[in-house]
Length: 261
Image (cartoon, rainbow, N blue to C red):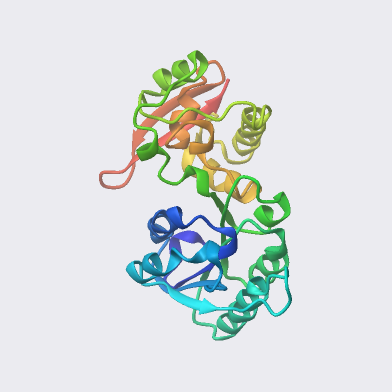
């Protein structure tokens, strides 16, 4: 199942592992993949920590699923979410499942969904364990959602400012420093692999094809993590590594391609 073909998406939220302030942004992001037909949030709504959720769940038309904690200091929310997910899967009418949580306990669930052929999207914080992120077809960092709006006047380091200038994106958010010192090199390596695999006779590869490959190899890849809105802007920020060309496609579409130097 490809993300371009998603028609019925299930959105499942672990309220104990999610920021209430990002709920609407999550819905906006997932809606770009297709139509969300199921929206459920799981939690023990009697908890003080979740007291503010009621109004937001009502406003966003998210069904609240109550799950009591049967044992003190033991969270039963994740088990309830897993059971409902498998029930929905067996209906065989949904082609995409979204798990909003930062908990590695959902890794087996993501693997099971993936084996069933549905498209699996994870949404969580950057602290989410790599195992859960890689079990998904796509993983979205909560920190990236609404980043542009929250950083309208970002304080840029000289290095980030130069990259943004090269990419002609003065409003792009500054990458978080020292969070992943080898992050760019990993992306460069994946771009090189994509080039070797998909390049045409002139040595160029369609950026869209490269982006699809990178998402398969690294589900949590998001250009915004590195301070760029789209992958082409990231490529343009490294003119010593990549040559870029644009040419017309079907209709009004412009195809962007790159070549490793």
